[in-house]
Length: 405
Image (cartoon, rainbow, N blue to C red; front, side, top):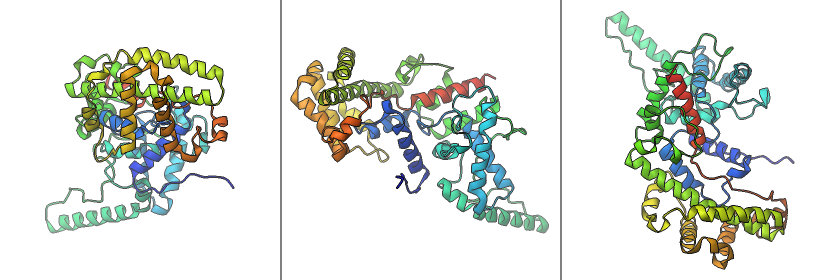
């Protein structure tokens, strides 16, 4: 029997988290092997709200509402809405591949067999940035679109009655009749038969307004107003760092330290697994990486790092960090503050790493399960935390190019 993975679509945020999780399973270097996802996502949401690791190009945030509005204009019934929306998204693949800029095209490999449609990937972001007004999960939007049509018809009828009786026209949209931002730029006449990722200046200004109005305190908002095209691996290496606000620099400094510090725990985990599996060459490679990390972490002033401020920053109603995760992080930091080089030889540090994997993976822990250890690829969880910067940087570069058209 074929195994499947399913989730209940309670809300768009849950769907986005699930898709992000599925994506990470395909990226061995990015997997959250030590259960640090809550802290990672807290920083990412502070810095770059509305983004996710599986988003690709910025103009999809316009493609999707354009396609949905076209279906609404034809009053596509709820029974057909989902299938027709999916068919339109698949029709978009070939024009984008023929545009010359194919980086980030959904369906570049799968073509018409594409299973994860852009609309599902961007749905939460569209709502977060206020481009999507309808505050419903995607499937619920599809199933209840007939009610939206009914409400629009009722408002139109009332407006007609008011006009005939000489009363003032009611032009304010009623609650439940709006699905997309009223200032959404017009869809190009040739869309979707011809499409590319190049934003017009009007489109770029609209998206920038949505970012700055919906998340004015975010670094994403600040960068959308004050920067240009850049190519740096992590946000704390941004050339405009010194011009950022104190708050942004404070967040980035905590995020940087956490990324560097916990990378060592991932390296430590890989060394122990290699040693347990008798993989001498793999162990040597991870040992060398660990030694380089020890030199790097030595340049960080860990003794002055205020962990109380760190936890106050990352823990909120949307990001609950378990007591076990907090204890793991604090114990690891305490050990490397004392002797980073010595952790590989220290029994408490080895036990800390082993116990963490066992807590998370239980019977599938590679420290307990010989089959799981044998199937291990020799490296996992080694991607450094950059808090969705790759997505944010790609979005911002698309935005800057559009603004400079």
